[in-house]
Image (cartoon, rainbow, N blue to C red; front, side, top):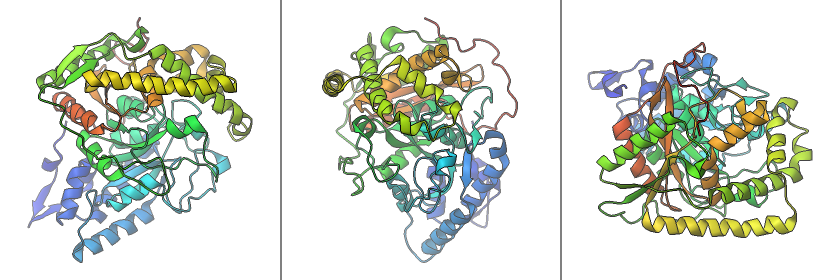
Length: 500
């Protein structure tokens, strides 16, 4: 653990800055820039230097935006000096997943096919972070078109390594942002989540991550002029990764709200009614009863203890609503849409990235129109059952992934590996399908690898999730930034096999 406010010194009222600014939180950086203690230019230079130092090992940042970041920082410093009040994320660098547009920069999706596809403008979440004063410093890696698997390996940019252990995946599909944030290349990352793609990198890299409610943040996931089909409209959401829950809160406040480019985004208040003096938390350590690694179970137990100490009433429950039915409905709806688009999609993917989706379609085959329409009603019923659960409990605590971080590409190498990863991420999948908010936060470290838990809340109650995650963070601590390990070292004991 580090104390960034003790990692620098002041000379005549001003900070003498080296590269240590990359260790600061977003909140600390923004406050120091706003009061003139440091400049946005100094912040950007520190993070660009950190990228140059560690990205050759981690390979998380795909396109470094050094020139534009410097110009943005200089402009912010000029405006602040002229008396303009900077935003709540003044000077804070952030990375952006390769499938989210940054104006004037190629949005490659990791593929050679899209190498020259420059974004005409910032995507809504990028524009919102910029409006709050944050500065994009680079695009970040992901699997090809996000469908190549969980591990961030792309045709254009290669493989991202977990800074804790290069023999373990950083998770995905927003693994580039997870690894960049964990290793100090940026205090914030902007990714997306359609079944764990923010929460799994947060868990595997030892950071925090927010998967918002469907409709909380505006987004635009089009590739070309056409909008995606139904499941691809309501399942994927954009969201932030950060090293602290407090920084997630800052990003949450900046990202939320309406935007004419996304009619799904709703003007819901950021903070709802107080949860009461002793809000109840339901704990589900083994969702669906399919097995959980003892180290992950221990992380959930540690988080539960932290919540008890913070005044929550914690109660174990048998399971979340209709887990098996939820997973089946999710799989059939999503794979039906993929099957229709697959002849076109597969032509732009390298052969190495086709296996994951092909195994997914074989595991959960597409359905005919009557069944697809029936499943849209199943989803509404699932949402209703979760809403009933939240009448009694304000939060649900469970694992992000029921195993410790696994080896790179496990989900694409064989049907057994595919099944193992699909099973381990089941709570993420279920909550994405229902559209609920969740915050992933570290629950501890086992055999040198972080273990993540998640706090799931009612729709549009991200504030409850953030508050619960802060209580866990106060007990467990902040685990990152870390120095990347350049060579694989096997865990001392335990391994990653799923235990029934």
